[in-house]
Structures are given as C-alpha cells and as structure tokens.
Length: 407
Image (tube, rainbow, N blue to C red; front, side):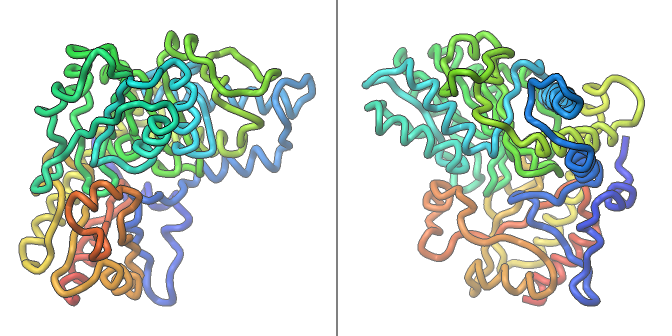
C-alpha cells in the first residue's frame, strides 16, 4: 500500500496557509505536527454539541463518557494494548513525572535505575528527580557519537538485582535513531526484574508500535506528534497498574486501572482530537475492516513513504560537504529526523535563514541536553533539526536542499 500524499495534505488546513506568495514548508514535525482535519472536526463537534463532566445521567455527560471510551479504545488499538490500560494526561512529561512518583513508592535508597544519554529529558529528569529524593543510584547507558546508536553491549553491566527500572526511548528526538527496544527488553529480562519504561513520542508517528510485541511494561506518547492535539497518553500493563498506587483524589475512579492516573477532569476535547487523529492514521490503511489491521497497514505505508524521503535527503546532502549530519549515517535504524551543523554558521543562524524562506526548522538541544552535551555541541548552540512526516513531499525536501545549498 502506498500513500496518496496530496489527498492527505488536503485534510490539513495549516498546510494551505501561505506567507505572502510563499507556501509554508513544515519541517518541524519532531517538535509537533500540524493537526489533521479529522481531529479538528472531532474537537469542534464535542465543544459545539455540548460538553460536560463524566458520570452524569444527562445527555451531554453520557455523550462525554462515550467519547472518553472511544478515545481510550482508539489509543489501545494504535498501541496494541487494551482500553483499560490507557491513561490520558496533559502531556507525556506530566504523565511520566506522576508515574515515576507512583512507582517510586515501592523503591528504597540504594535501588538502581538506568537512563540513557540519548533520550529526551522527559524520560530522564523525572527519574533523576526521583533518584535524588529517594537516594537511588542512577546508571547511564551511553551512545556512540559517531553513529548515534545506543551502546547496548554495555547494558548488561549496568543491571543488577537492585535495578528497578530501565528508561529508554523508542526513537531519538534529536538524532532520529530508532532504538532496538525489543533487544533492550531481552537484555533486561535476562539480567534483572526491572521495569521497562519506553518514551515512544518519536516512534509512534513513524511506524507501527505494538506494546505486546515489544514486551515493555510502560509506554508513553504524545498525540500532538501524530497529527492530533496537545495531549499525553500512557499505556501500562494491567497487572502492574493494579499493583501501583497512583496519586489521585479520593473520590476519583479506580477502574479501569489506568484511569487512576487521569487526575482531575481531563481534556475531553483533547480526547476527541486524539480519537480523530487515530481515525486519520487508520484511514491510511483503508476505510473498511478492523481498525488495528488498518492502523498497522497505514503506519507501514507511512514508514515506506518516509524512507523514500530519507533516501532523497541523504543523497542530496552528499553534494553539501560543509554540512555534518549526526546520528545513523544512512536510512537504517532512523526515523526521518535529521540533526546537523553547517560549517561557519551557528545553528540558530541556519534555522533563521531557513525561516526567512518559510522553511520551518528547529535549532538548539530540543530537550535532548544529554545527547547534545555528549556530542560536544552544547557551547556552540547545539544542532539544527529538520523532520519529515507523512504529509512531507519530495518537492519540499528539494526546497530544503536548495536552501541549504544557497546558505
């Protein structure tokens, strides 16, 4: 199955906004994608049709409960879990912070956790803060600066009978590296009883993710990175959720177990938008048939389209010797996120140069501060980052290459 990119783009209002006579080229997807029409329409319908809190007998509350169930079921289909294992929150960071505290209630001074130098700080700082408060020992898994891949051969040496958790990313938000999470799980299971927490913010938008196949214990992602609104989603195993005491208000529900992590009144409009985003992804695999199968087919098609864009971009970089690319040097083991520096130009200067041509890109550390420091780029302003997604076209990649050549 292949994607019809023009049809996809037609359902994204922001892609048709222009800066004067120039079209906007959105290459800032790793920091947040544009919102698809299905998500927008779902949100508008919920707010225009009457909203209410959950648990009431009247029409708008009943409709809100039905919407919430549908959103949980949709995310379960996207991640390969069950609806009762899904919790919504304001963002992945908030969910990870609250989850870390809930898990930490069962740990004590001298216990150990493993974090990586490749991850976004949202999957590092919550565990560092917990370690500081509980007296835990932090062990760091490094990566190879030459190719941006985790040094998995060192992981067994970081594990012991006191390891309580290993936190790892599905893909690097800075370098684009796809981490072999299944291999991480195998290594951890062979060496310890530690839990495995996966930051899938950068992997869910780019290829099929199945929590059962990965074998992890917890996984978090962000719908605003896959064409929905600003929300966070946590998946966790049912048996684990039933053991963990979440920080919650006394009257708030306890069943299904993941709901305990949805503190206060959630953003029902955000849930509506997330449902629309999942429906959009499912539509890429067809409009008929079981949703999980359509999601898998659609995300496989997304990955194929993005591989073509990756080949095009990497081929074009070969003619630009003053640009240094970081992360995997070819299209293997990477999502279409590219971090680079340009000889003679600070990263912010490059991003500004591109912005002046309506090409949207980021510069800095992108909250992957450990990775940027490991690469020795902290003092020089970090990196320039561009990212493609399923609505990116070959013409837009060419426009980026042309602009970099002009620079």
